[in-house]
Image (cartoon, rainbow, N blue to C red; front, side):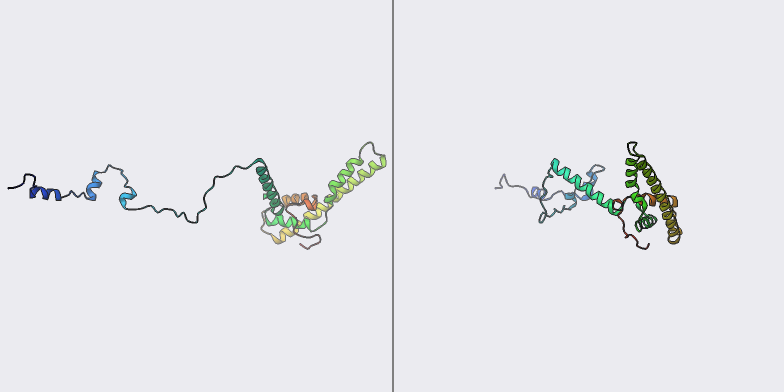
Length: 202
């Protein structure tokens, strides 16, 4: 006697058949502009290696003393760099030549400011007349010496620039002023620092 709960062979065949959805059908069912995920494409994202990496610690805020010391160190480094290399106005081979011309000789201009201070004190009305007269004579001698020294420096710079840089576009007047201002600065205070010794041939 057949069992009431026994399934027919046709039912078994229907259950064994599964619906297979092709890629074309699934793509057609997706909305326009759909971007498949990496998981659907079968691509796995590689994990970043953790071995050997330093643990990132949160940045600690600087104290007032540390910030002040950091600013002081930055200023000192900037001043040292300016002392060595100079600024934008010191760039160029013509400027280097003008500096070497000035640094290779003793200039009267280095005593100009010291003499000006003596003249300022000696020209005071409280000073005796001979002292005031001597101060004025000293002032005139310093001014004349600086003028003669500047002319000699300018002539030498002009000669060397025309010999070594015949195609230079640097204005000679600018070079003259640059050299004269350097000549009236104390040697230890010149920036960039002198690269030639006094008396050295340029």
